[in-house]
Image (cartoon, rainbow, N blue to C red; front, side, top):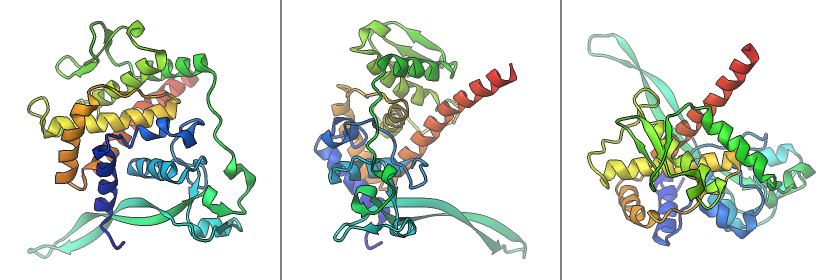
Length: 299
């Protein structure tokens, strides 16, 4: 890559924030994504995760694409299809580790895992001609609101988190390990309630007995606080996409934007770390669904 991958992605997020836009909220306000908002999908139907979700959501909005499917030039060729002339690919990243054996001073050998990241280009299927027809189908909106809300309620209940109601603020209290939510009726609609709950339950996953996530927060508004809020923001966006919910823009976002900009300007890897933590939090909450199914099957 001619330009550092971390810097390229971070620059895009920063540009959005400087315009007052949250990259992870843009899909729900974009005219060309008026179908069901879901995570971007690989050619085989597997969803992308982490930072790639943000990158491809943003690319879809910029390009006006409605299809969630993306694939490489080679994968398109394997379907007997062709990337349209003049189309440019969009960056996604692949992260992994390699194991290197190093000789120590005493002659012993020690294995060390070295993380690496590489970038490659993918194309939305609307940039490709000749693919099987199902790739071009527009996602169907989930119109059954009652069914969607019922599913969201069951999803969050499966966590068995201590969720209390009262007051006019939503927050996670680490000392008592509980999520505080305003009364259900205080929200504009059920979707807004569950989207807010998604944010607070992402915070809930940071507890030392769960994902043990700690950014060294000392006080409200410091860097550790900003990093954790960024994780909760992304985690909620990922969960909203999975549950077909529409997140509502909180009035506090304006205050957070400046702290997020400072974090991203100071550390070009911060958004990658936040997205990875957010994905782990979302996966952790999804894990309770599997436990419910297994318990039901055993019964």
